[in-house]
Length: 542
Image (cartoon, rainbow, N blue to C red; front, side):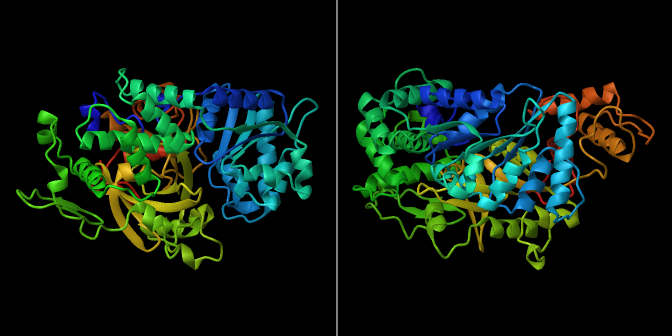
């Protein structure tokens, strides 16, 4: 709602990782240069550290965009894995086949080593990127180090980028990991924004959203920098809430006073004036309800403090009380921050996988192993870990585990079980709650893991030259999407015409249009037609 009020085309401070809003400060550019240097030197390890929310993921995305096309990348977002689970995840990312359900490190290492040798023979390089690497155990780090022993006379066959919080540097300083530490060819620690960088960052995001005129006053930016300590993620959250607060109180510019109040609210500090909090809460509820027509007609808001407000877990009601005296909020339901901060609520990775598999009618608790990607293999389920936006999740149309980060740096894993318009249903331990997506974005900046059931039986990816039932399925599925259905026989090859059709579908879905049907293309293709073989995020599949 406030976007139109301020002449914006969209919310400029969303935490969703939209590449259009990429802003590389001087410190981010320097970090990127260190990573590129470390990889260019052909060393084993490159290390990037920084406090929570300083932009490590932003640097990583910029790095991926600058890697040459002959580099294969495996990304691990959830490193709380055993050695076997981590190696299996790396194999999955690089599409290296291995026996289903194996628990043998030797089998996985042999498969990965052979794949690295084959890639080198084809003139390709392989890079492994591990996010949140401070959570790796010493044993798993040692297994990764041993993988980097595979080399030619001139270069390593596997290079590893470790990204993590400052604890990662402390971890690698341990004596038992000194062999790995000696192989780190480049290190960089991200600092927070300076005040001038904060000013440029705020204006950059406002301009991308369509507003070149300064909406934030100089003192407001100074306050936002001081209260966020220059941390980009906190800066986004404060500025977003400040814009909402200015809109709710009918002001055309964001001033220092509004920024201070916004910071008290989003950082969990007690607001001094309850009426302002009621006003912003009311505006947030109106955002969720979509009641924009009457409010935007005049840009003049009635006295929001005179409206009674009642907040519930899955729905909200708002009824003006003409002539009524101001009312206090009536027993509001716990916020997402309160739920995540409740020590009685289980929001770890294991419980999230149990809940996710339950949506597939699979009891992950019955197995001997800790529920994770391996738990679904016997049922033909695969994991797909990515970083994306609500738009990406809608296209997949499959439940997913979201990784949420609270301001104290703690990670929480919840299941996205439903997505209807601008509201999302989360399963958090035993609780199910429906919230506006904007509320979830305060804690989520894109990482997710979903499980999917492959509609094909053979090896992936499907590519030109292949024949068989899997290629027949691909032709039929594309026919259902592009309206060019035609009889297909097992003898027809994956030809150039089929490659063009796959590339056209990938273009529509914002995928790399290479004409090769890999995991992501198959998941999107299955979601694009009715009668999918798994649970859906939306009430009715498209």
